[in-house]
Length: 223
Length: 111
Image (cartoon, rainbow over all chains, first blue to last red; front, side):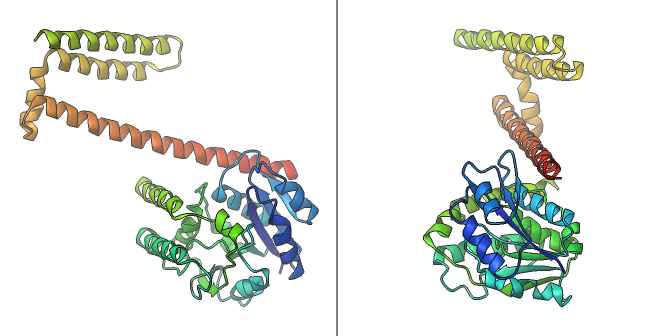
């Protein structure tokens, strides 16, 4: 089965090269980087590291980049698609663990949850993430322990069903919503979160969280 | 009362200005007849209310609001909120369309 790793990246020249290398080291060489209109050398660094690079001419946000990445992976004939953050907060050694439920046909969508075993996550992040889990459940009726995780895996069948409309960070909750709506078989796998100064700076603040919440509620009202 | 006349004159001049703008947009075919009529209607209501403020007492009485002016202010707030919601939805849709275009261009280019 052909596994494609999709890495959305916006101004990640400092970390994307290292992330790609770490993924390759685990034997995954089909890597698609979506450069979401970066102002830095993200594209060049990613290409040099050996990834297939797609570049958005303008910045569209995480949701936009993930959607493009998943479409690209499907075009390349992927059987399994893994989404992976470019900021270095995931451990590439855990990819095998995350795709396992799909290989053994137990699930079609897997979310790597940082909160089953939240070692090293700052308390304020923990609170923010749990808040999002509750909100995601209240709005979309699917319970996850980590609705905002960027480490996911989809079977080809599930990826084709996903309809991603969000442009920005609210995409994480939207994917959970789609899993529920399309009745995609779903599993969670515990993962580690590597919190470095860099990944903390790049991640979401709780204030940004409030903005995401506003978007999600409005989105819900509009349907 | 004379202070109120000053306000009436100012509002009326503004309405004339606003309607003339809409008319120009309509003449240059940047707006449809329907859009133009809608704006004329909206500004017409403003004029009626400004010159005959007593009229607003009728809806006020129907809805059990004390004064006519209060009813007018409440109505304005509702209209404003609704327009913000409409604009928000429209922007959201445009954003999605831009993303769709961006995706299409990006995927097309590498083929």
